[in-house]
Image 1 (tube, rainbow, N blue to C red):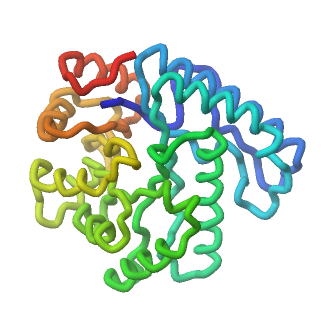
Image 2 (image 1 turned 60 degrees about the vertical axis):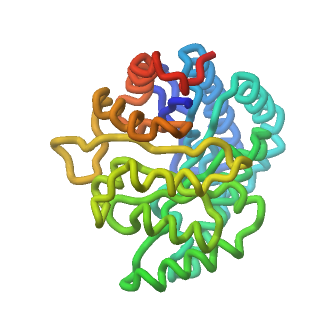
Length: 299
């Protein structure tokens, strides 16, 4: 079991997601920005490994506008050695990496332009993970997408589009249940047709579980969607912000709830991404709370 957090480290002064306005694009500005982002990513990875945080979600903004037609800079070649060095550091320290494109990436979109942009963005994410030299356990997670007034047709459209993707994307993709459209059971149905692994999102399950199915009942089916080549199953964990809309992530980790969840899935090894506002602070608290759990990977 590895514990992680997404994208931003709040203890460090830099961000690996610096960007700029599209209208001010130039190759020089793009390359300068990417250089800074990669430097900061290295700082974050070093912080994480020194603190036993061995799971991390890399920001989608690492290379701004990478999938946009405006991007003409050869960032891949310019930073090939930098990516390789970061990948070596990740592998040498036994880290797990993932990425998560934003909610506008829709494989089941009805608009062909949205579909084309979505596939281009997924290709960019896959390229980043390939440049890092990471194996198939480094995943790109996304949601099934929109309903578009017809849930059945939208699920079928996702399946058809997924099966037509390039293998370089296919081998990285996983899907997760969301907070109001597609449940974990819906995702399991998609898996049955495609073989795509399913990430279990605890908060989304609580908000959008039609049958209120207990974790102990559904999680074994979710874990079974992961092939050994995909690595240990990944889970997104959070609790509800008591003052926010349903599905809004909590400001900090609820340790009793977290330990209750890890107990519910005690017979499974998982890597847990904490989708919690205070990022690495909650990760450090979770690692300390799991001190007696034999599944926890320690450096």
